[in-house]
Length: 239
Ligand SMILES: Nc1ncnc2c1ncn2[C@@H]1O[C@H](COP(=O)(O)OP(=O)(O)O)[C@@H](O)[C@H]1O
Ligand SMILES: [Mg+2]
Image (cartoon, rainbow, N blue to C red; front, side, top):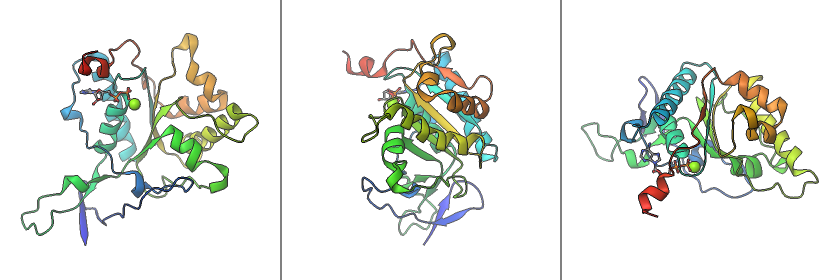
């Protein structure tokens, strides 16, 4: 059965959504059941949120044109990092099946699967990049336009390693070197760590080799600091 993609001229088979098994590297198809979020549905009134959305759209579109490009969204819990990053994923297009028995060309968005990739940092670091998996990063080769790595800084401590902090840097290096120096691949990174130049906790966590690769991948102005914005969860639950 042929499924459509919302980028012109492309069709693909429907991906299979195999259940994710811990300890096994997931394939893109296994992690693409993302909540459908579009920039047009979001509240972008705050100028810094609006700025973040513009950076994300520019990043997504540069990668869709084949130019590996990155950006970082930094800020505390609840400011909207995950929501904005998911909107960027959907912005790059999706495989969307036709509704069964539909003749008029309507699409079944409940089964849509974005072409860009979304992964939680903890899953990337502690599952995919666990050395026992021999996981090969081949995202660009597989036609994935870019990858969101959500919640860098919220990884659980790497188990069974003498020096988990250095091992964490080593695992991030595999991704960041591939993205910025190797094959080339766009990355959208969200983090709860500060990227304030005076106290750059993300840089301290990742180390200099990784930080220089982030700077190489991310154009000027694409390190976005959302610190100081209200926590939307508190506002919406009335606490
Ligand atoms: N721009 C936005 N417009 C509307 N709702 C938003 C927006 N950003 C975030 N939210 C809502 O606020 C809550 C927290 O957002 P989330 O993206 O999870 O924050 P973070 O990832 O920074 O912790 C979510 O329920 C989300 O739906
Ligand atoms: Mg989040």
